[in-house]
Length: 162
Image (cartoon, rainbow, N blue to C red; front, side, top):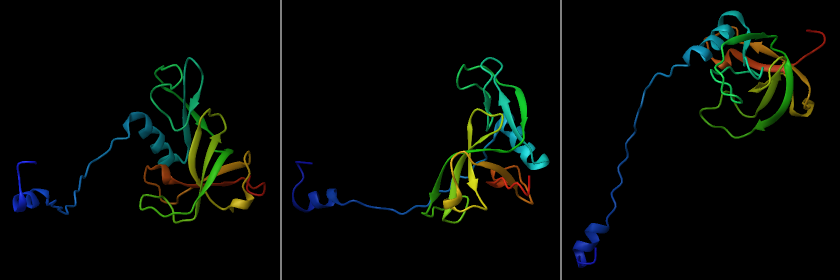
């Protein structure tokens, strides 16, 4: 402020900083479509997709509207859970919101019968053993709660387990 001089100018330039921790608790509704998907994971260890009646695309995770033609979606499809690894990365830096301790592998799995990829953790495999196109299957948590992490991770399909 040009009209202030000397000590008054110094007082106006002082910047005060206050430390305050904000807590904003809230509940988030998954909605009817994603709730059905999560309940199938929790209660039946099943992976469901949702199919568009017009363009026939199957979405996993499911959504209420087709991303291609904007049709309303309501036709559920049960999937085997097995799929193909489309891509992956190794996460080496820790963040509080991450679902696993570093390092961990995060991949995109295109489930059999689905047209979209599902990002998820990869387990029981080393980075050197992973190749795009390899077959994966889900491993479910012992205790499930209705969360995407009810699938503990996807692991390579072993012919001895198949």
